[in-house]
Amino acid sequence: MTTEDRLRDAFRADAETIQSGTIRPAPAAPEAARRGSELGADRPPGGLHLPAGLRRARGASRPRLPRPGRVRGLRPAGGDAGWARSRPAVAALAAATAVAAIAVAATVAGGSGGSRSGALSVLGAPTPPAPRYLVGTVQLGHARGLGIFNAQTGKRTGVVRPPARGMSFLTVAATAPGRFIAAAVHSSPHNCSSTRLYRLTLTSRGKLARLAPLPGGRVSGTLTSLGASAGGRVIAYAANHCNGRPGWLGVIRPVTGQSRQWPLRSEGLLDLTLTPDGRTVYFLNTQVLEGDGSIRAMSTSAPAGPMTRRARIVLPAGSASGSGGSIALAGHGRILLACQEIQDTAVLTAYRAATGGELAVLHTWPHVDVSPCTLTAAASGGYLLISDIGTHLWRMQLGSGGTRQLPIATDAVDQVAW
Image 1 (cartoon, helix red, strand yellow):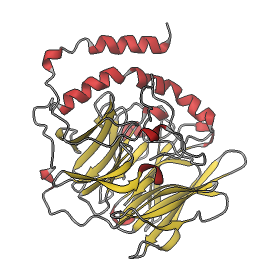
Image 2 (cartoon, rainbow, N blue to C red):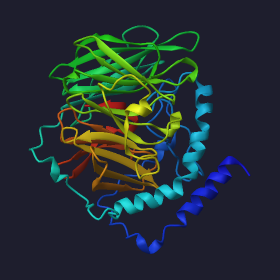
Image 3 (spheres, helix red, strand yellow):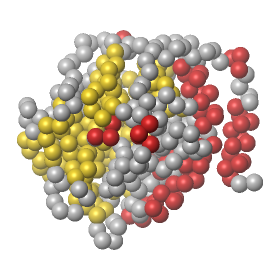
Image 4 (tube, rainbow, N blue to C red):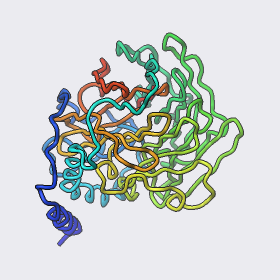
């Protein structure tokens, strides 16, 4: 009997302990997403990224490996060999799908007794205006640059080319409307990478105003995720060493030049997101990179030591959002948003960031063709971008719960920040 067979039998036995009568039926989905069957096609090569989870073609018997150039992390150093080391985690995730589906059904039904669909009224304060422009990676020949898009019309207003020959942009994080931190990688002939961080500023018309190196922003490794606090006072990143050795979580404070690192047992983390004051970083300790699948939080001033000893678990592995998906923060860091796609339905849920207690199921999108949905919170607060659930990006106003599809195709831009 193979390892996958044993895992499947174990999960089946665990699922059989749940009585069907104890699970209330899920509410009707409030809105259907457009089905983007063309998303199953591979994008042109050239991206160095690894997504915030696994993408799955409709009808596939198990999750397929991510498409090049897709989402909130980077491809592990070492190319195909790096992916080979991640395959046991892929098999485990595939075997866990049945149990995860039950967990999502319970979440949608309000298993805690307090869930509801719709607006996130606990945000309280009036919603600020949504950012006018968003930035994301785009393919430019053999390298990846940054595209600037009007968030209302979908028109591309500008392009930022890599700062030097042999470099490609990996990802970007917003610090304020029109202000970003961008990461660019330079690959050596020996397949080892170094990453450089830059400050990126836009004009009021959505053009590049300035691109300048971030003080202390040189990383001797390949990033898997990037996050920034309000104003860019604290920058957090996860990276791995060459040849896929265990990576580290790092924090940079550009104003003071201080930095610190915490070693990982895995090759990296995904979905780093900081509270606006920069005091706490949340992240997914993804199984794709040999983590435990939990969603964790850690003080950016934590003493030296292994990440697993310094970071607390907010949502454990095996929860509706803990084994994959994407996360973001809202409500000045008080609310954790998590999106997970199970059995062709994407579920967006809000939790208390401090305790992991469930607040509300905000939205469901049925009939999605790739997974998981990817969340990007607006730097100004109050808004959320959701991608990888159809042919176009979606925008949600968290205070009202209103959603609408943006005129920006999912395949036109990647690694979005606004």
